[in-house]
Image (cartoon, rainbow, N blue to C red; front, side, top):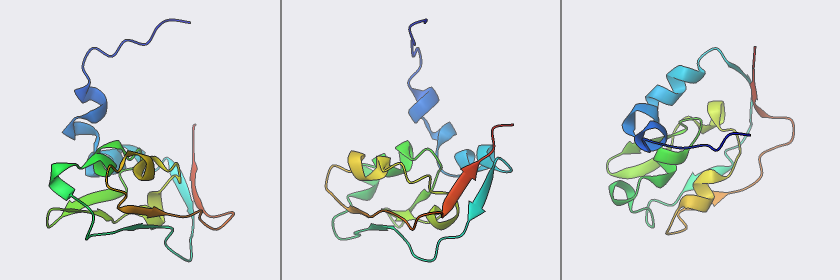
Length: 111
């Protein structure tokens, strides 16, 4: 197996692969099984927003947006892959993450 060498970290973490761009890349490649409740909430009081942006930058589905200087879980009911990355990367614990309902969420299409 070849070693993975990342020559340009902006490929993964630059503005070209966050938010709207990620959602555009995923368009038509998933099916949504509707959720009836939000399983992620951002505590706006604790969120340091523009000083951090880690949830926005690292979310593999682009479920977050930055609004008024704070992170907002805006597209999660339609896109969230329930990976928990946002919860783990938040340095101030502003992400309240709980398990979603069984049988709901996105189903990715790999064809």
